[in-house]
Image (cartoon, rainbow, N blue to C red; front, side):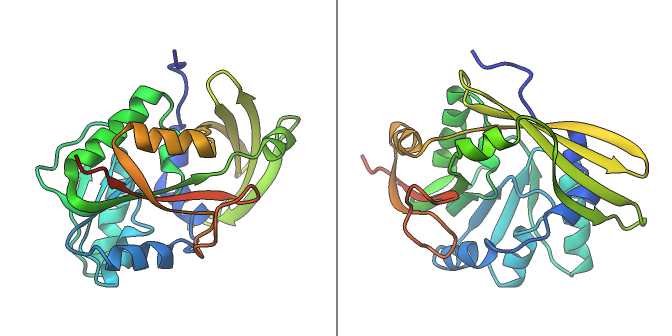
Length: 253
């Protein structure tokens, strides 16, 4: 049984902090090229504040977004309005949603599937995706390739991983400490935010999916792997890859 305490702290989803920390676009071209081939209708799950949703829309992708966190969606809507964009953004859980339409591509970027902690919940995500995917549609996602050496290096003490300045001028120093739970395969991370003399600790638990395990999860849930990469440049997946990047399709029966 999975510990009910697994999860992600609310402050990590604060858009003021989230957008300053997550301002990279190394995955944008990859998802754009994929979406451009399946542009009848695209759905991004865990779209957050629109880091990918908005630039993909600007590039002509017919995209909708879904996220579990209202504050993130409000930030995405605000950014879209300022850019003169209309994007359908829905507040819902990717484990159980019903948009009453199908999409030619559904994707979950940025390791977000790793915030699904039990096998049953992972299966619910795949089931919801399958119900909303056209027969020839694709399901794409990216996750980390688990690295024991990296996780162990974060067990002894907090390690600074970033620092940035908020719009109000406050400097944020972000540090991480983690402890790997072998029974659940969950890396129990704590993110420490030092802001204006205050310290805010937040949990960021991430389920580890091992390469052969994820291949079996895909197959068990009625999908087949079309492509699997180790980097967003589409290089081949191998033991040294930092990422597992999947493109899947429903198995035809």
